[in-house]
Image 1 (tube, rainbow, N blue to C red):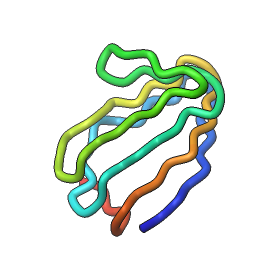
Image 2: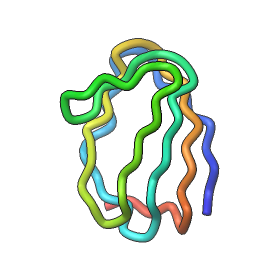
Image 3: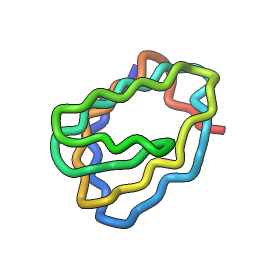
Length: 76
């Protein structure tokens, strides 16, 4: 697996994607991100099961998140 501390500048959009080999568990440490019409703020938890399309991730403000992938980090 992989643990990533990520920082997105306000306005950054990560296109919809799939992680075929790992579940994604993300904790929003600061800021606001939008995912499928839901706003995640500091203290929020986001989960995307492996093999499922998710996104786009849209940083409404600068966002810092701690993200854990429980397998190889591949993206399609």
